[in-house]
Image (cartoon, rainbow, N blue to C red):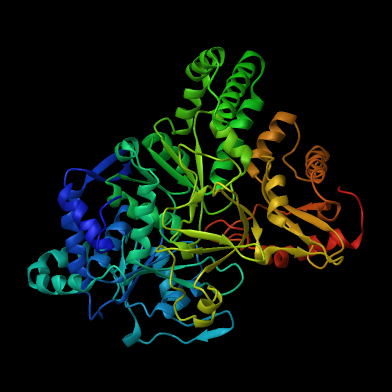
Length: 615
């Protein structure tokens, strides 16, 4: 069991003082990654903390928002703010001004830290007034406007409504001595049970809710991760890859895991992910399933483009890897002949594929935020890599279960963390209790009451089962069950997962609520579509007969394993991939089912105007 820290900032400051020469951050500068030690960064954290306190009047426990992509600088601001008892609220860079404005109004933020000029523009826009989910928010007067700090002010003209982080840090450094007593006073007030942060849920069905997360919630999660044995010496050496935004609860856990485990935080972003992996070769790679799916799709597409002996060699090596993984999953020893093949396959092919992905030093690959397909997990196992699937929610900060490295059960999300209790309710809903579970939602007493049953069990909203050994399977979302006009219930996630096995499918949305049969809307992966078109010598057009044949075959194969009332009768292809900006995806890349139905209503209606076979 790891040491129990009294709060997140105590944990961070303890790490910086007891391991001053350990690498805290690994940041890409040009073509290479540069290391920054705790001894280099602790003075910056302390200067930023003093700078924040000198920015204007700040209540004890005031809220500070961090708007924009996660960077080393945003993490330093986060650490500094927490160290003086402020509550930090990370906000996705992709959100529109009115949603950003709502979050500031909801939390009554007294300080705003933005990444760049684009995020400052959002602040300026919502201060002019906005409407969000039917409520109008008036323009903010000068006296109610929180101070704005810009981390990267490149291209910004000087103005009275912002200051740069560099300026704030310099002022804090100059005033550190005079503010030392105030820093100590605020720090002495922080308790483990106090609120550390608010993290907003994705808001797929309404205004987002601010999940209350205490220091205890976050630290309990990290302590249980330590108990599960995830962080080995390889991770501490090669680092934790952080490309997920801190506004995503999964990303926030990784941010705090760096100082907790004494592992470097290897900074990256979604647009640069592939190149950064190869350049940094981290020890720990956490991602949503879609990232692993895209990796598999790209490797598969490259293999399909090969001809002759090269293709045979790669397919042989992957088959050897699959056979090895199958025997290990079932606890059987490798026969001598297979062990020799495995060594040869690894030397000739598999090690090169791992290096090509930047995962040759990765001892932990962790998948969370949605269900991981079994074929994706098996593909990585065939490469000699094990993707550990975990499960949780923003409200559980963020984990409830995990597959341990020594005991992986494909198709499950593993077993509960040590201090998490799980049970299945009478209606099949998974219920949970534990020290990492939030106490509820800010300013939403009704939603908080609905989230817990009379005995204090948190309602996850997920349908699942727990076997005799404690392994958990998630079978669907309780609120996302479709009910056909014939009265049959359909779990769309199960069908969508099968449809997405084909690399061409970026997203699949099953439709059928209140209808007499089910249909599907596809969004295609443009890169895979282009590659397929190049191979086939056809236009990269979803309407091309060859592409339509592929999709018809996929529907037929999927339907063969479904009950008659679940089968997909017909399909349509959306005119463009689903995106966050387009409104079909949340900032954490989950499908907004209702938004897809609204945006593509005409396309959907066309599938019900004539009952016909897939075309």
